[in-house]
Amino acid sequence: MSSLRTVINNSIIIHPPGFYIIGFESLPYIDIYIIFLAFLYVVSLVFNMLLIYIIARDHCLHTPKFLAVVNLAVVDVIINTSIIPGMIKAFLLRDNFVPFNLCLLQMFIYYVGISMESYALAVLAYDRAIAICCPFRQNVFNTVAIMSCIIGVTWVYNLGRTAYSTTIMTRLSFCNSVKVLSYFCDYAPVFRLACNDYTMQWSVASASSMVNLMAPFTFIVLSYACILITVFRMKSVSSRMKALATCIEHLVLVAVFYIPIFSIFLLGLYVRAIDPDQRVLSLSLASCIPPCINPVVYSLKTKDIKIRALAMVHRGKVRP
Image (cartoon, rainbow, N blue to C red; front, side):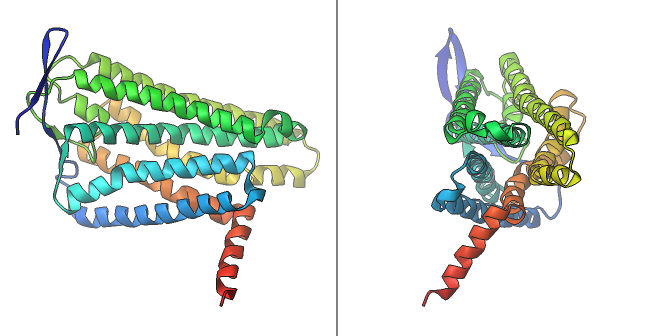
């Protein structure tokens, strides 16, 4: 196979036929790990699709909160679907070659998903803040139409931004190694293989990581600051506990997503002090586990979902 040559600004740009994904090379028992991820993928797919189905079928759940929950479930399916089947192909079936265009597509889908996960958690924080801080004005500040607009804006923004950051990868020339030290066509490991200047790509990656992680996280922190202020102004202890209890599942999702991402992704991008194999292993877990945990948390901790799920099971049993 020969490289694809294009001319941009009078410079020859060399695009290889594809890349080889070589993460986990020195890690033992990698087959067991990939099988574990495959199991997580099936669990994530089943629970998220079940969650979407329950909410879509029941008109009583067509509320701003559950619209945000469906948005998170869709994002979770996208994230795991973008990487785990590819990991099975690369590391379990030993076919680690990814064509150039397919590599960019995988990169685009994954980063849309991982960015949207961050914004989806911020949207859920907005729902909780309005419900607790402005309970009598929910019909003004948090309707289905408003929630739809908020979610739509986050999708348009992330699709556009990720399309730009993926498109500028085509300006890079790859004339040496095409071995990507990651578990998929990861943005930074790919652009660092380029033999021409990748300052623009690094700047976009660093800016995007800061904006798409820190902005939603800051909004979540501010939302919970408002929630705590409102809760501590309540006179009844039972009212305080009831209000805080509605936030537990969301706080679990926030912790599961942000703690590993902050500790691995940002350190790996700026410090580069993490062992490459350990970074790949930790980041793959950080990417794959939250989409599996999210629907389980909402299915088991949210009363409305639990009641509808049990009702569906009961109806299935009584049918002849």
